[in-house]
Length: 366
Ligand code: G6P
Image: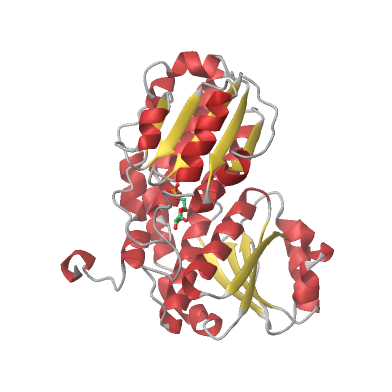
């Protein structure tokens, strides 16, 4: 009801603004990195795996894609992500030393549950879920679990579930890094400090809402949009495009920026807004040359740039300045303005934001 919504117009907006609280709750009480964060017997399970296979659908698959980058770069463990509805029906090569990680807000998605059972039938019994509902079928089915504390998510388009999944998956990364000897005491302390600071950092990003609203006015009249990101932020570009198409019905695609020249550049005209996720990381210079390729074809760039990137507004280049680069946790901050952009664009178009046409919150049948 209206009372629950408080100052917000929709559940989605309320849930976007709840993210500092949701992340704070998800990480509450964590004093140090230990396998027990994932349940009894976790140490033994982690000692028996040397690769990770992530299974999920929709937004949850994009948190999984982000985790793949973390797992390989920080924990040095090979990681793969598969869409649950594909994995369950394909012939694959099972390896019993695989940690199966399912990611699901609801814990009831039929394809993800079937993919888990398929993996188990192939002899992969080391199973862990990152899930928002502690009483769900998925939590019952998996040996280990990390329960995110986003609270009930009502908007069909997932927001706070996604960022809390990322928090849980980062903890999993640190735990596997530590058990495999890739996390020093100093690195552990630094990562924990950055995680504890996330609620404050998220508040600073939410304060950008008025600037995002101004961009949403431009987007409302578009029929297409392209989202670019690289590395750890490519899955964030995918999630930004998914949010926009789900609730505003604007056709949106995401590409890793280095792939522009192999196709999507043909679509770039002045009618095509190009949203660019621009963290100040090792790929920044490469990303800047990708942005030049767009500018040279008259494309309109809408750039979310970290404060320390020195990317300036120019003709055809709109910039919203994020806080300074946030290191490995940067995806958790960069997705938030993309959620807001989709939300305000949908509002400007007058769509049913919390209940977009043809979509369901939880898909419990195939
Ligand atoms: C539906 C929802 C999405 C969600 C997906 C997976 O499509 O509309 O928001 O990402 O299911 O749901 P799950 O509960 O498994 O994360």
